Length: 201
Image 1 (cartoon, rainbow, N blue to C red):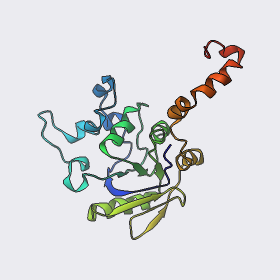
Image 2: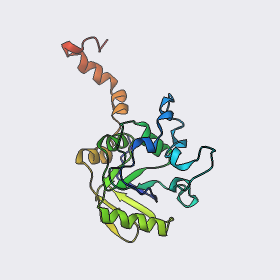
Image 3: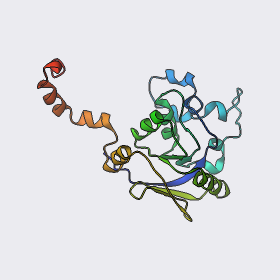
Image 4: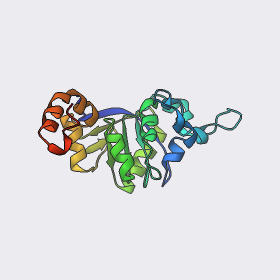
């Protein structure tokens, strides 16, 4: 499994506190049976009018196309626990998120996709967002070994739960893939447990 130690890419600022999962991915798209088209839908109702014309949103702006590091504010990803929200962001092209704080379940769902969610101070987030808006071509680097984010001129400290950081840097973030890859070991262990005997058949 891929180890995630450093993410480098252009940033996209999504400014505002309490941006919830319903804003990230509207509920009507949850009925799709796969995640394959989720990359078409992030922030859909904030990006498009009813007639399909585009609104003023950073995900629509030409200068932010191809950006891979989202810079948000307080309580990013709050609301319902829908895993479609990180799926939509990742399939749009987001590989990491840095914000002032995150909803716990959203952050965990991101890490399960190999997408770091790191926390920086309010002042540092404001500086990063300002730097990106002034120079959209500027690259950011999130270093999970040093626990920093750099905009090429300044470096800021970031934090995240140690268990999630370890899962990313050690390449153990995808628990489903790990279980499938070790199915025989799971069956062997289950066979030794009397209350799981039916599982091992």
